[in-house]
Amino acid sequence: MQIGPYLLKNQLIVAPMAGVTDRPFRMLCKAMGAGMAVSEMITSNKTLWHKAKTLRRADHSGEVEPISVQIAGADPAEMAEAARMNVDQGAQIIDINMGCPAKKVCNVAAGSALMRDEALVARILEAVVGAVDVPVTLKIRTGWSREHKNALAIARLAEQSGIAALAVHGRTREDLYHGEAEYETIAAVKQALSIPVIANGDIDSPEKARFVLDVTGADAIMIGRAAQGRPWIFREIQHYLDSGAHLPPPRVAEIRAVLLAHLDELYAFYGEYSGCRIARKHIAWYTRALSGGNAFRQAMYQLENTEDQRLAVADYFDRLCEASERLQYIDEPSSRPARAPE
Image (cartoon, helix red, strand yellow):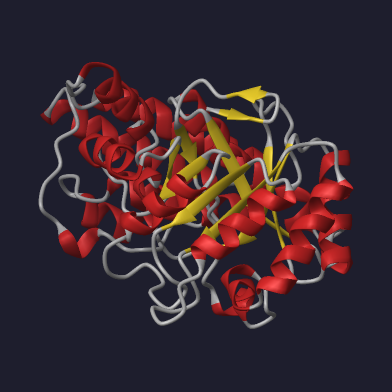
């Protein structure tokens, strides 16, 4: 998979996810097999650039190349300036967000709302591509609604504007994350373009990854929610793509070490107060569907400092280690929150 001058080590990319794909998570996913990870979106509103949240999102210290940064906004000149700013901060690839379905993004005519105005899309793409000397990529959905699917038209605009690669989430904005992804639309986009196309949506297993690559003809796949609490999914998928065989479940001791190291990175990155609270959702994702996970989480949510939180996680995984050498998932649907308390 080639994006501009960057040859990725494989076809596996971490999807940009607000509140998730911070630097600690991106670095972890890359260490566990992802070929690239796209940052949380950074607003083009320059009045927010000096806020702590934006400064953290623009922090790429020690990150493995290539560094891909997603920007969001609706004004071509502001988006061009945001691209330049992020390149100055170390971005090696700029990604344009036209796929986010969140109301707070769409209400300011950004994200997937931009797909309603193809003329504006063209102006934004041309402005950003012309503003920087690094590759510019684009992430879109299949359209604004099921009655207005225009991914193919936007894809052609992207290629004409000099976009280096296009990611397509196989749902409309109206669908949010419900229903099944439309892989046939992604396949049609791939057939129409000569630039690399990345398929996104519902890729949650090695078998699904193989299926999506085959049915869409995409050059790469983008994995989002399935990597939450399971960053080793990238090595599992790559092993399956290479061999057609499954890796055994990871050892509990390894995941204990992975999670504790992840927590340490979060604590260092966000500080004591925010680090403890942001870590809660990650701990919840790591422990969903594990034995005793629900009771553990309810107790963990009450902890107010990083030391107690880390000790509780270590103790929980020590108990899992005593019961089994490898991770064993059980059917525990009530313990799978989309987002843990912060």
